[in-house]
Length: 334
Image (cartoon, rainbow, N blue to C red; front, side):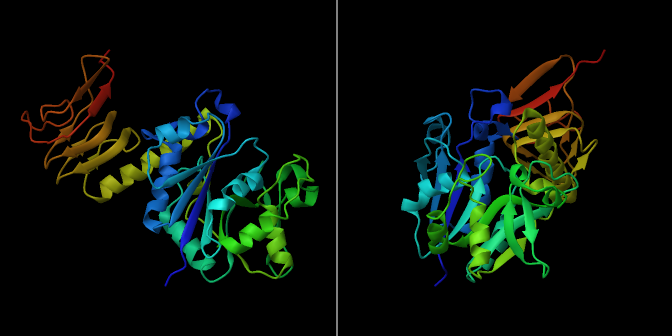
């Protein structure tokens, strides 16, 4: 019988740089909250338990994210990532493995997480790391002369020699829950932030001779977090680029792959052509031969549940089908 999986998602941060009253993980990417993207990545893993640790914004998170399979745990006060995971300990199964994720890292792929769970089920600590040309602000991975991971040092606590290291900690890890619980009980806050760092358990694992196995994402943007509006916009473009590439692989013609936005699910028949500046919301179906055009005669926004939509007509006849809401946006000719 496979070892069960518990998932802990940290979502208590205020997101000061967002300059918003809305909790950071509720800001939308492609029409869905950041936290919803993170939860969706876990769906294929068949977790026995999912726990979300929340704080800033109070009960607005459990209200907005309506999932019966999520257990909500309040972190108050907020004393660091290690302290956040400690709040979830009463709900963890010591016989399980535990995957730790972050609600503001929305583009993590299920395939990456699946690889980490396989390693943890072999009794090791799977640690997701990435090399960055500009690692400023990230915790550095410190290895020994044999190349084995020994510890993680946070940026503010790093020495000049450690600051030049380019392999950084993403914060995402997966490990046997029993070991996690034991190490969490030994965390201290003797550091520059006076916080309980989750990353300190990696040093504990290495010191006890436990295997720490680094894993790597397919792309750097997969593990990027959102701390500002600019970073959110950047990840939005990465996400939409991936959608555009997938549509073209399916045979859809995009006049400009950089100027399409899908905020939901878009299904296309054969020989569909989508012009620039189309925005699709909800579940949209474009039938074979449909042509999606930029709106004209505006600026205006048209939403429709009928097939006679601004973006589902071809050759002058409504050949496409849509189940909305569906939106087409564009600027009037000047």
